Length: 451
Image (cartoon, rainbow, N blue to C red):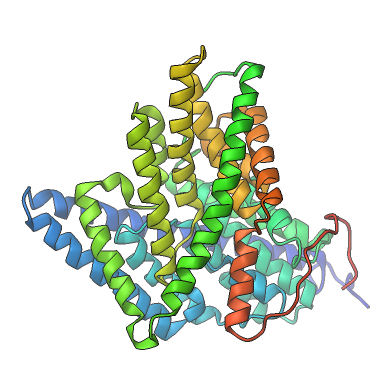
């Protein structure tokens, strides 16, 4: 073997890292363009609704527009790339296991334009799903142009996915840890592949930050909490652990329910969900959209417990039906908004019933974001770091750790499986490729690995 025959030879570390750097730069630019397109659509759609005044007209226009956009997104995905439905994370994991095909040109088209239509219509879906999948497909396009080993190819796919997550939330460290925790079954850990993920994540986040001039998305100012309050946050974690298991079960159940609809009529749920979204955009706008902007507004406002619980219910149901409709979109951002509502409700009750300062409300919201994520995705460290990078509330790292740990432990003892593991198993089962896959109990090692 002559891997190091030349510093810029095709198989050298330097050449591989340059490819990872190019992936990061391209994904950062692509994600920024996708986000800019969404912001433009949100602004135009909002301006249109405002210009229509009151009465029935804005409802009618919103119903027609949202229903048309969601249906168009569904049909685009079905005709161009069915694997572009949903977040695509399970498709990336399946590709890294050599069990799912990768058609990068079709997926990029369906994910970009289908994502703009679906998310721009107001569905309760996150922008991180499309950017993660598009990031991996960008890496796939680059890897096809070079003679690359299987391990290097999978490592570059993971680097593209991490770059997409880093760009979506401006959270490069969480993106790196996501690969470590979420794709531990599939990722070929080694010096080259691990460094490739780091390089791509850093550059993608840097490009996004430079182009958008934004820092942490959901800045929350919270002081240190008394240690005794950690008991309350542990109780919150137990509740979130149960909620996470229920969320995973409900999502798979609704998806399977929609699958029972005759194939020629599977566009009907997309039409109906889009129509309902159009109604909510006017009647209760906080129940629509991915929730990235909503989280900060919720924390800075003072909603009552009943309002917060209603919002939790509506957004919970919204993401289930939006995701199951078969259009592109992620669940990370909606999960964060659901957790914020539930955490704030818990915090409001705690402040009213116990001698604790009002800051505890915000602390519960921040901790709940990490806890719900940890319970559903079963990646507690990603939950902690993602919340820290999103909110900048580093004073809460210990409370968030407590909530994420108890939530993850609760979900494990309730017998729930990680959501993307369930989605991948479901995808393989439907495609006739399901195999018995024992739970991975091997500790993650960041050293080199035989391929």
